Length: 319
Image (cartoon, rainbow, N blue to C red; front, side):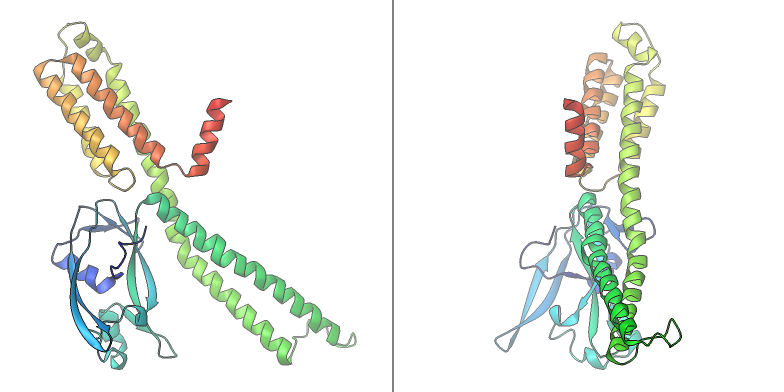
């Protein structure tokens, strides 16, 4: 999901500054440069805009909620240029540009590193699929077709008496080299994208697995002998149950990624309620609180399903 309309894109140098001032806390996703926001934050940024030949100073405030994903992307500086801060930037040395999160191409074009604001895990995973499948896979297919056509045209011009495998020359040769080079570039891009796509896949799989394990853990407590004894008004040890519920509660803290942040917080709320009910000896309320915690963990798991997966599950259930 994009930022609120009118807000400038988050530049890497802004994010680095927010981190230094502890305005934003982020962690890397599985060693990639993709970041996950760890706590709710409201960082602000003062920047300049040029309108009708006049430079105006503006301050904006961002909302970076817990679990939001920030994905790095290089973009043209022209789209994000600050007429004051970036004055004279074209004359800076490469290392000075690097400190600003910028890079100069061979033709003099300057790129700036920005962070896309991605709402949740599913959006991030779909983004990686779209990059690979829609943008580059289609271009690779087109290039392969063009290369095959060039080779066919070239071979018709080559005398059968010449050695097989001869390279086409002239315009055909130039076209072939151009498309072969572009094909190589795309393969390099896909190699760069692959770790992110894999990280998204691992993240979704891990979250689903952990949610299932925590649900089973709570169900195990509900069906345990100590819980049955409590419901039957028979004295039973509760310290073990309390310790296990605390363990589940703390484990949920490690999974705060959207879109499951809200149901996880609700699950933790009900786990606290269950612990309180255990302390005051209300086994019926313990059961109800744990059932509600399990229900929210199930909602969290369901929210990690892509639309096609949900439809498949519904069709399977109906059958």
